[in-house]
Amino acid sequence: MPDTTDIQQIAISSHMTNTTTTTNSRKTSLFRPEEESSSNNDSLCAPNCDGEPKRGRTATETTMVSAASDDVSTANVVALTAVEEEDDNEESSTIHRFFFHFIRCSSPYNGNSDAKGFALDTSTRGVISVGGLFLITALLRLAEDAAGCDTFLVSNTDECTNEIYGMRPSSLITAVQVAVAVLSSLCMPIIGAIIDHTQYRRLIGRLTALLLLGFNIAFVFLNANNWFAFLLLLIPFLFTFSVHSTATFAYFPELTNNEQTLYKYSASFTVIQFLSMLFVLAIVVSSINVIGIQNDVVATAHFSQLIVVAWSTIFFGVAWFLYFSPKPTFADIPPGSTLVTAGFRKLLNTLGKIQNYFPAIQWYLVMIACVNAALPTVTTVVVTVMAGIMNFTPSQG
Image (cartoon, rainbow, N blue to C red; front, side, top):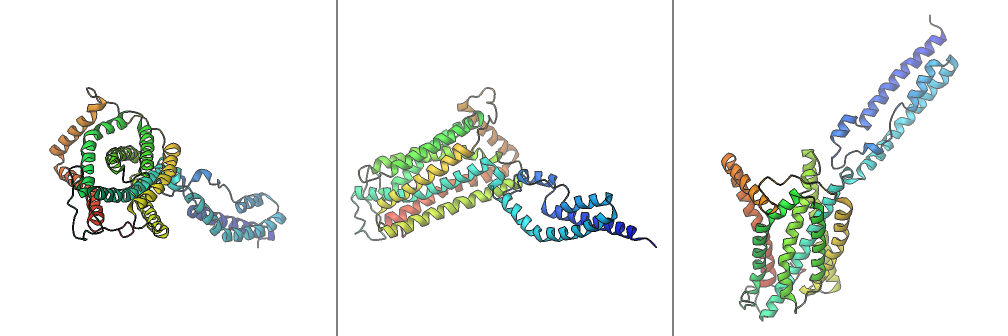
């Protein structure tokens, strides 16, 4: 029959085994293995293991190891202490898990500064688009007034047939869009080559962000005397917007090497943009009704541009001067090409390969081109019909 000392040592050894097993299983559930953590390092809300405390032995494990080499009387005390500490760890595990989950998710995109900058830029571009809707409505109404159209006497089913500068007021915005589309199609291959083959990607983003801010500040001063100048100013404004979008999207493929994470990023950027647009739209519509300018399209345009200016100043500034990082040259200029010709040659080579080896992609690109050309036109037509023919006020539209 074993004596008391043997029984106590057996009990301590058994408790050590159970404690270690329980602790290891808890470590597996609370803390990801290093391999898994590194593979998911770019996830939308990935654990930031750099700031997480290192876990060696727990207090229970350390105490139990010490007890193995102590005498029997000390082992009795340690066994009781181990049981009590195990119970305390069980109660605090939920708080511990919640605390580190909060810390991990407190840094969006796991601290990826380029991704955070992309999100802020996407939000600002959406807000600029909302301000543009109110601006176009004001320009259209001012053009009708300059053409002699009495918008209060014309019925809701008639279009003003008077002309201003050789065109109907309802056609002016569409003409501006055509001019921007032609200018962009001619210049975008050159802009793309500069972004790909030089180190000026961030510089282009910064300059175009400042230009967009300057344009929106100027639009705050829209009135009946300068409306045509501001209408022409839409051409460089919209072209600058396209160049800025090109510089921004050049960062997108390099945000992460994980394809699934890139999908998550893309979805989050879309959600952020639409939520920003809805938020600003709600602010403008509710504010103009409170202020009492809901029937004054020009005053509404002024108010919306003030919000755009404030939003752009903050978020463009943070995105391009704090978050976006400088990037090296993506690729060298191909032999026999220059910055002016490299983009056009690359397009021709790509189109030739697609036509010869991937004919299905050819029709897909044709479909994309048609859709992208139609979407801005639909927006312009809707605004023209609602404001120019149906005489909707900004709050009604």
